[in-house]
Image (tube, rainbow, N blue to C red):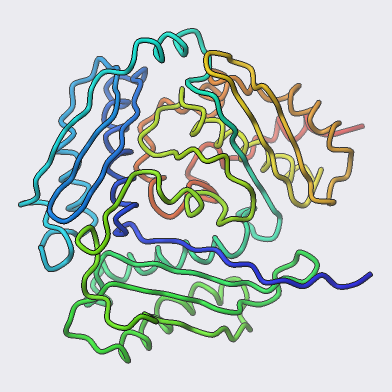
Amino acid sequence: MKTKKYSFTSESVSEGHPDKVADQISDAILDAYLKIDPQSKVACECLITTGQLIIAGEITSLAKVDPVAIAKEVIRSIGYTHPDYGFDCNTAAYINLLHQQSPEINKSVIDGGAGDQGLMFGYASNETKELMPLPIVLAHKIMIRQSELRKNGTLEWLLPDAKSQVTVRYENEVPIAIETVVVSTQHKSNVTQETIRREVINQIILPVINEYISDSKPEFLINPSGSFTIGGPHGDTGLTGRKIIVDTYGGSCPHGGGAFSGKDSTKVDRSAAYAARYVAKHIVSSRLADRCTVQLSYAIGVAEPTSVYVNTHGTGKVEEEVIVEKIREVFDLTPNGITRTLNLRQSIYLKTASYGHFGRIEFPWEVIDNKIIQLLKFN
């Protein structure tokens, strides 16, 4: 058989990237409502630019919270506390345009129906211990390390805004080498590009990639555009929901198009995407396949999914239509069923809004249930 060779690339962005700032504010506001009233219906979006933040969306809740105070604290915790960094949480203008959810939408979900139509994808692969594609795992971990070294003062010249991109070489679907690593990081003006390159490679990138493929000798592209002192919302306007591929699988599987942040679990854009990952991860963990893509689709006001699709990419141990039957038998994929199974009425969402929603064991949709593994077995 001919060896299949290809390169695949995924990217991540830091918590200080303007789009991720917007995502984090949206999810922090969601968390605040759920903490007081777990039945809150929330759809919150943000736009952040030079010196201004707009908060908009629809909310039905018994809770009373202060969205502007929440937003300020999120921005402060990220590190945007001075105009020179790209945003000053203390002097910015805040516009709160939140209003009540449409009664028609509320009526469609009150009896357990989906809050909208749509299609959602989940994916799992046994190529990493996280059951995630290696390129997106590495891209996220590089950004996490950038944040850690910035916040603990190891690299005091780092600023919040940053991006990473990792290209991995595959042979027969197995990652064998890391080919290229790109990191662009905002920085203070008192540091040279030579220092930035040396320290980013040695202290940020190598400790991450050596954990996975230690003998790779990738090409490093560090701040390839040159100086990067103007960043954050001053350098680029941020919007909630604009990093959906970063949030998911780095392009390794399709995406239905819906964003996650700022939405409660009645919005299947979010909850069904988590459920699809939960299903795919159990399929791979039960060794029914080495790789698995799951698609779910819904109609507004209807509880049961309108379709369930599985693709095991030629790695399945049983026929895909048989796996679909087993999924329908084992998993409750109604919005209420997903919410109960994954306990999605918790205030857990701020943590999801940077460095990916998947592959992180602290989230309930990442936890393997051994009872489900047993139910998925075929005699």
